Length: 315
Ligand SMILES: [Zn+2]
Image 1 (cartoon, rainbow, N blue to C red):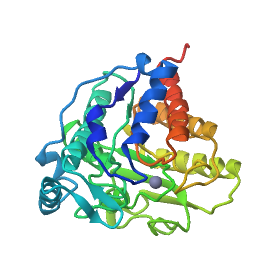
Image 2 (cartoon, rainbow, N blue to C red):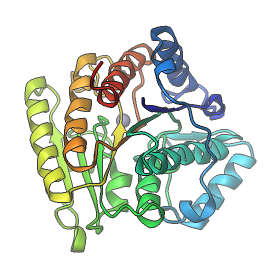
Image 3 (cartoon, protein in one colour):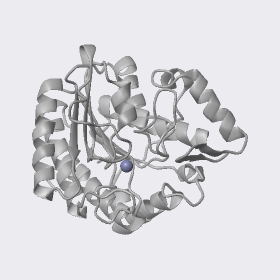
Image 4 (cartoon, rainbow, N blue to C red):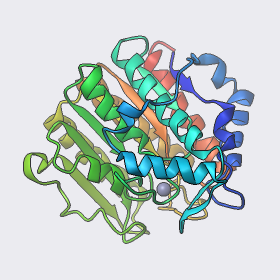
């Protein structure tokens, strides 16, 4: 089985005419229903993230400002990021899903989980919303796992087409959380150069793979797999988190690195392989970008099929 997290409440983060819109999730959920994949998954109940856990990544002044801005009715919180009245509550529910998934996977209730959440998280900084992201879902899961679930070492793999600058910043000096990002370069948000590798005790636990538009797909996969194996061997993670963006598909309206749907099955399998080797197979995948709803749904399908296959190797 695989744990599948989705709640219709995620649609209430109403961004209006915006690429990061509710239709993205509606398309995925409808597609998983038609393909019957949703019935092969376990659907847990969970709670929004609490203040104490949120404070490990975000400043209290920032989360208070988000809350107050949403309660006043929302609008543009920063140039790219829109809130509606419900957005802060929805963001807390999204982060809570990723934390809950990590806890269940660490405790052995299942080995894989997929969190179909919004808003996304990997650009969110300690005290700043950015690039459609409010709370850094994977960073909150990693820090909670370290502090409360007896996990010492975590590897975060980010294959969204954009660099996960918020996640990188959260663990820049952390020796226990590895961060591997493969992303289009040069591109938004401007960070993620190959020489950004962490500092202090975290030196060498950040690994960036900037990829030029037009790079052949095979070369993309070769570089990803080699870097992934290198980081996994270095970190020996007990839990692997995926910032799973699907905006590197060639038909994505704001991203694209020329990938096809099947490429996301290959990426998933590569992560599952290192998770099996080091982390008892424990993988929690979290939706980030992907802005062509039809294609996004197809990409999530092959991603989930690979996760389910890892949970049922006899099938
Ligand atoms: Zn993205």
